[in-house]
Image (tube, rainbow, N blue to C red; front, side, top):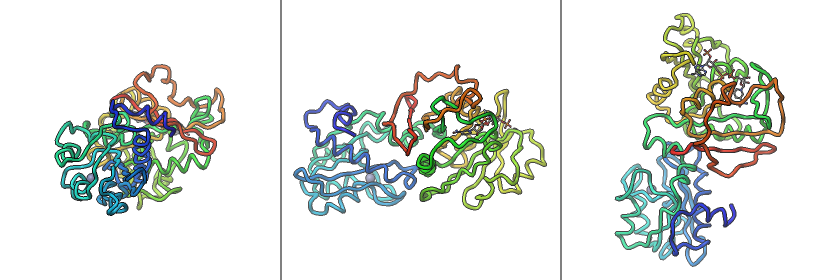
Length: 382
Ligand SMILES: NC(=O)c1ccc[n+]([C@@H]2O[C@H](COP(=O)([O-])OP(=O)(O)OC[C@H]3O[C@@H](n4cnc5c(N)ncnc54)[C@H](OP(=O)(O)O)[C@@H]3O)[C@@H](O)[C@H]2O)c1
Ligand SMILES: [Zn+2]
């Protein structure tokens, strides 16, 4: 990120902040991303310690229950932390959790200034920033608006205020907005680098969800294979109202490593339940309406079984239903330089023209993965 773009994120009107400060804070934000797949439901946090313009320590929260970013960075800086400035992407914690509070550790290390990116959600006062100020440390922050905090840790912010899973929708699409060459057909759209990125994305979610049309067309596995696995196995959530999934579906090949949860209508046949259960699926009957399974009920069950974040990977109909009901907080569009033409499946089905996108806007800079481009849109308010 260049200096100008970094400065654009600054919402604080504070003369104590130099361009170098902002760049250090951006670096803490970038470092934080190293914890993806290993720390959720905790947030990604990065920390940089700088003394006399020299970086003397850096770190990120790398493992759930492990040391926080500040502790890692202080450990690297050792005595150089004395009189230094600590840059932390999220407000340092002030509560005794799995590890002692970072605010105390910063005080003990003799840091003289703390600059932090985003306030801990829901904490107006009584947080780490207050504790640091009371100890005589100069504190500058929050430097960024909440939208930056949400962009980096969307599920963490969402579940702080909602008791429903955070839902991100990911679709691989052609330049002409198609997700398959023809209805019911399986089409390879993304290149290998983009596929690897999707596997990496999966590691940061509790569950991956698809509709029955996708299972029928693609017979996907939806596991993490191209990159190292996340801390917890990703649970596969399938919306199969009529319980038609076959016991030889590829999803069941990995059942020992990653559970399969199948959501069906309540009036599904006993025989179908037995077939799916003996294949290893956990069945969840939920109410339905004319559009299919009631998505509110599906998400409530997911929440009850501990799935706090979901990456929905299609297909077109399920994507449209989730968007129509305003249940999507983020959209990942992985766009490939190909065109599939008018026979192709439109990304958001025939409902595309009636969807309201006014609350979505770019959350992160577009990324290239091989020949593909990833665009990330967040819904206002998370
Ligand atoms: N490029 C990509 O990123 C991507 C990703 C996924 C899929 N695809 C492609 O998309 C096509 C499949 O898409 P699709 O639209 O046919 O299928 P889909 O969205 O995967 O599944 C739709 C089916 O899910 C079930 N469902 C249950 N409750 C629902 C609800 N509330 N809303 C919507 N669906 C609900 C319904 O079938 P039942 O009544 O039978 O349960 C419905 O027909 C395939 O060609 C596949 O290759 C592409
Ligand atoms: Zn901490």
